[in-house]
Length: 454
Image 1 (cartoon, rainbow, N blue to C red):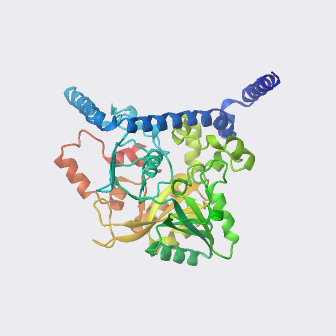
Image 2: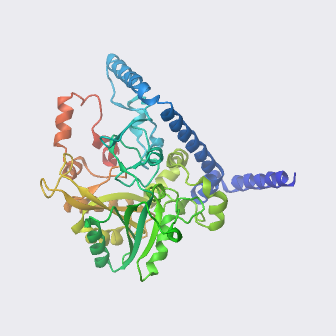
Image 3: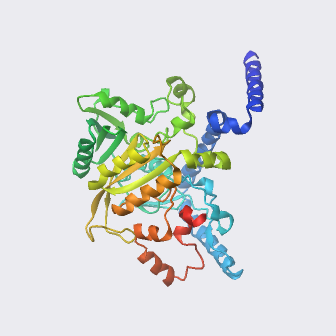
């Protein structure tokens, strides 16, 4: 009875505080209140529902049987659009807030929405070593299933909610033997990261840059054998956030080694959304919070978007950066210096990427593959001269001049000419002509770039 009275008093005081300060003040300056009281519990409900649904559908083997019928329903919607005179472009009916991208696709409100209820795993083909999934299947759902039957992905899906199409699979092992190297000095950091990325002995390579001249470079190898006293189940809800755990190795003089269970390693950045959650819940890595409430973390990115409102969205746009860039390894040092000068966001995420010569990419080496670095900049810029549009435009110019690429989930201010200078659109435009789809779907530039939407 006393606990009920205590909760009632606490709730009353909270309502008085909200009424006194104003809802907008709370959302902008104390967003953690809303996130902790509402979004975290709601996110748990979402996760439980989708996990149980995926497990049940796969166990009953109903996904492949229903797939053809779902495709026919999409075809029916397209035919109806055509019969009605195809007055507007088509787009998928998934709401913009459900995507991982922080960008809100306003075109959803003006285009014809085609509902696509395709969210199931269709087939795991161990002979061909591929898994076929519907387009709304996410990485958390996929790795949970694959690991349970002894398979995994050859790429590292850091966040649970990322989606994929048909993808290759490889036999899984129990652990990743992860070695942490503390590296100081920007030149040495870039050299070490490049060398480890080219080593055929490493299955995984990652770097976290905590300042201009401090980084931890991690190299991982799949293994079924582990030293018992060095196993770290980093994915447990009460464990420190991964980037904070890694930070302690900055002061180590000797390379340290841990064994991390495979799925824990794959989703090591999920709980803290890399390091974005520290800006939403500043005390989220506190041991007390982790042990009591950590099982509800993270809040769903889609729910954060749905509830942020126009005011906080504009604030994020002006005072927050979420960018991934693919840069040739030889240009990595120059890009980091540019980011330090113009944006100044830390940590920076480094991940190697072997870029093949494929349509869609303006490849500096012609038909030869080239090793690139994916550099992720997420957080609040500390550079005094940072201005969202001008600084991003400068970044985009740097990328174009160095045969680099901007990931298109983020804010993009390229003009149409600059966009097709960065990306090779020859095959894309050719197919739009051949398939007679120019009147059916908007050009990708018009969906992505802010310059097209202003």
